[in-house]
Image (cartoon, rainbow, N blue to C red; front, side, top):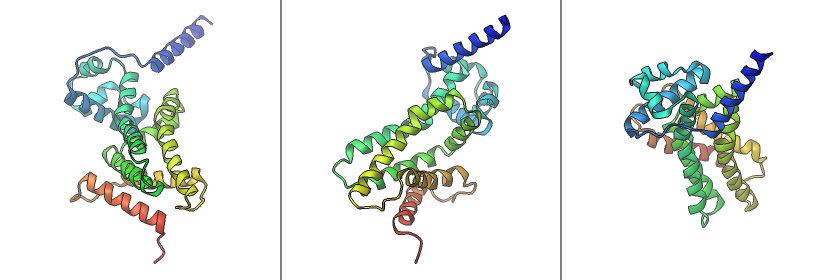
Length: 223
């Protein structure tokens, strides 16, 4: 019984530490930190949280293992900052688009938001793998990721789609279906495309794919 109580207390302590997101203050070199975050994103997407050990991440990043502890303190903190590294820019950009494009029509705002999502997916193609890894484990991390990042973007996209429907600019397709049709068509292309064009920059490829997604969604594929 005492062992069970200690294990339960340990689990609660770990969960509390994760929610608080504490990490040691350290003067970080941005270049080294980004290399670690890129490696962590790949490792967490490929192996999940439990399978992505800090030594493995250090090998991928080509840095000394102690540097990860120096910059991030713990594996939980590294995961949290990896999520912010991958998803934070998307949320900030979506918020900026929403604020700066109020004078545009809903359909124009939708075009800008889809382009922003495509640029994000092109920069961080492993983000979908990270989400799927957490969905398989059904962890507290998944709830935190959904609350702070995934839901935030989906709500903004849903608002744009709802406005476009109310202005009769798009059909009254159920918003939950329509939102994920758009998100899936962007995310899966960059997450699962193992042989992207080599003579096109990620930025140009993102713009090109966003253009075709909107073309097909808005106008269909029938000649």
